[in-house]
Amino acid sequence: TNVTRTIPVVFHVVYANATQNISQAQIMSQLDVLNEDFRKMNSDTTSIPGPFKQLAADTEIEFCLASVDPSGQPTTGITRTATTVSVFDYYTSPNQIKTGSQGGKDAWPNTQYLNIWIGNIGGGPAGSQILGYATSPGASAAADGVVLLYTTVGKPPHNTFPAPINRGRTATHEVGHWLDLKHIWGDEPGCTADDLVTDTPQQKAENQGCPTFPLLTGPGASCATTGPGAMYMNYMDYTDDNCMNMFTHGQKARMIAALTTSRASLLT
Ligand code: ARG
Ligand code: ZN
Ligand code: CA
Image 1 (spheres, rainbow, N blue to C red):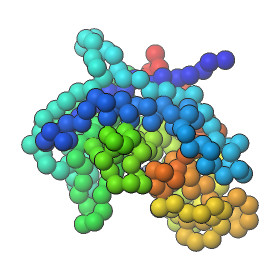
Image 2 (cartoon, rainbow, N blue to C red; image 1 turned 30 degrees about the vertical axis):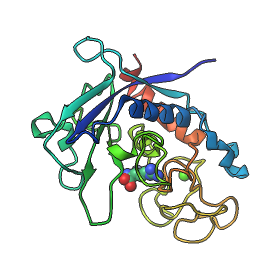
Image 3 (cartoon, protein in one colour; image 1 turned 90 degrees about the vertical axis):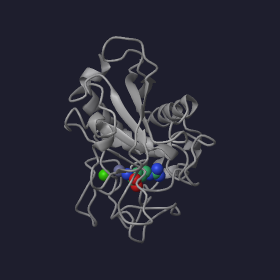
Image 4 (cartoon, rainbow, N blue to C red; image 1 turned 180 degrees about the horizontal axis):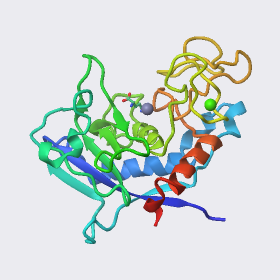
């Protein structure tokens, strides 16, 4: 039976120069990545370690560009807003890009659209670069949605973020948060905090780069010291784009729970 749930998306491109005013092709490439990853159509499912293969889920959630705008007029599902803001500082003003009066772009109603803002986000310590961020269900309507650094959008050649973080999976990770997923390690170091999903192994902390399977030792290891180890290839860890390749059935259930309760109006 076909239980596919399709979420209408509006991409708000907020640009200070021509490079930041990314192409429709780049946005379509990002939409492809979201649909591949959420439908388990990504080419790298072959890299899922054997013990985790049966845990990998087709979430049956899909994404389409919005075709009708909030006033009932046809739309491409992409808005474009010129700005004089050179950097939208995530650390001091995360909602500035979502605010028209501050050089950003106001949200479309979050009851009808997943809002994805794309811009030059930054701030924070030197040498760090925020790739994206998201709200979880329950955020204010004006702030609800996902924000992406413009270089991280889509696949190469559109995506210009340095490899191996250049496959458009920042959006996959952030949309996971928007559908109520927590980080796989539970956001606190140690083995008490949990992601509230039973089929993701309890894990001590985040992983970066790309560990070697099975990950049973080290800071990002599983709490179990035997077995398949940490599921560092889950989209909700912090590993490289070319290292992450799966959501689990438990994560699917949590996302569908959000889509059938707090976010149910998106599907009507
Ligand atoms: N919020 C996270 C950050 O900015 C997103 C990490 C996404 N990970 C990735 N491999 N694309 O660091
Ligand atoms: Zn995250
Ligand atoms: Ca878990």
